[in-house]
Each structure stands twice: as C-alpha cells, then as structure tokens.
Length: 329
Image (cartoon, rainbow, N blue to C red; front, side, top):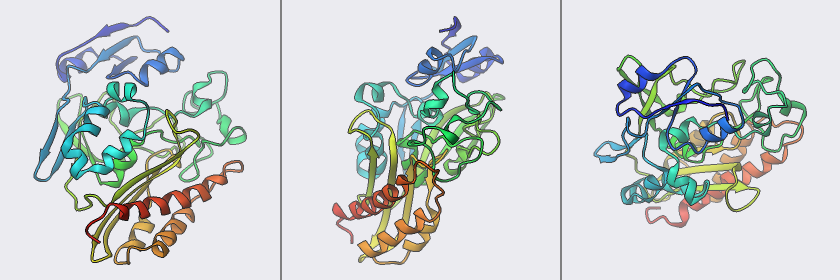
C-alpha cells in the first residue's frame, strides 16, 4: 500500500478544507481499504469522515432519514426500519457478513466499486480502472457481467444489495457540496450507466459528501421481498437479485415497485413491469408476465445468457414472496 497522510476532521467543512486533488474520503473502509491494497486507489491523503457526518436514523412523518455514517447493521436492526421499511432490512441482511455490516456505512455502500474481476486485476485491461485501456470482460469471463445498460466500454455491475432496495423505494440522496450548500439527487439518478465514461460510477459532484439517504413513507409494509441468487449462501455478491414491493387492496395491485441487482452498472428499475402490474390481480400469471417483460429488456453477452432465465425466475419468486406474509390482499 502506498504511504499516505491521514486526517480525521470533526466537521464536513474541515473535511473539504483538507481535500486536495489526490485525496480520498473514507468511512467504514470495507471497500476503500481493499482498493488501496490492490493499488487501484492510491491517494496521497485519506480523510476519515466518521466524526464529520451523521450516523442517526430519524423516523419522521414523511419518511425516514438515514445518516451517511449509519452502519448497515444499525439500519437493518432498527425496529422502525424492520416494521415499516422491511425491504431495506431484508436487502442489507442478504449481503456481506455480520462483521462487514458492522463496519460498512450507508454512504459507503452507495459509493462502493464494482467487484468485476478485471477491475481488480491490474494486469488486465479495464476502462473503469484505467480509461481507454479496454474492457477485458468483453471477450473474457462474463459470468458476473451485466445484461442490461452495458456499453462497449464496460459490462461491470454494481455490487450493492442495499441500493437495489433503495431504488425500488424511490429513495433520495441528500448531499453536501464543497461550498457548504446542500442538494438532493433522486436515487434512480445517483448511479450512472457506463456509456463512454465507465470510470464514473455516480453523479455525485466532485468532492461532495453524502449527508443522508431519505426513504419516503409508503404503503408497501409487509408486501415486500428481496430474493438474491448467488454462487454460495454467504459472503457472495448477486448473480441476479430482485427487490419487489406491492401495495395491495382486495387482491388488486395499486402500486408495484420492482428492481434488480447483478444485472447492470447501476441498481436497475423494471418500470415497464411495474406499469403492467398496476391495476392487475396479484397472482402468479401476472407475476410471470411481469418477469417476462423485464427479461425482454435485457441484452445478455455471449457467455452469460443463463442470467436471463435466472432473472425471470428470481423476479417471479420475489413477487410471490410479497404475498406470503401479507394480511392485506
């Protein structure tokens, strides 16, 4: 690991003052330290923001505000989150290990980098790691690669489970800019597709910090499910996942939210499927059709076509699981 200077400011203002061209913010460090060890990120200055940002979870009438420094464990184990936003808890608990969840933060989860093997192997070409060097996965190992929203420059996928639930629930990201002003980015617009600049994962302004994440109040309650398909039962990233949420009345779907991980450079919303489900009866036939509509949007690579069938079954299962604990259908 390259030597670096380390600072631990107590406010965001001081954190911004310490930042230079080749500096890096760090929170839990569960991804950032790995990147530094692998010589993918080699900052001259590391700025620890654990004392500069909030770790509170505030339940308010319009929704819940989750501070950027709230750990994944704190969020998943919060009683109000489990009762009113249980999709969030399900998604978080399906990822990583208890030890990592104890360290990983909400803000850090949003900013984690892909786990594409070509990104981590510095001997291989990767436009995300080194722009204009090529994409090794295009003609290489594609099992974990994307099947929607990819480009000729990058087929990597976003690794987060938490973020899939957040995009499904229409979350917002509250940010603090370098000039001290604050702004809000719809979660759906926070992460980017690769296009011709795959090195840019998000639309977070340069040197800005994530202050909190807001999830608006909803009526999904228990009619939610997070289904994750992976190589092994623990400590593995998703081959595909599906977050589903339904608002139901007398067996009819009033609102539907459907998103996936493991399929794209960003957490992916299936809006065509959501529109199809609205007003329909909550039954297997309609769930299977919604899954078929989602799969119709995909463009798998030569060696990961298996993901389409896997995705179709995962979406159907997630929608069916929305009904298993329901008392409002």
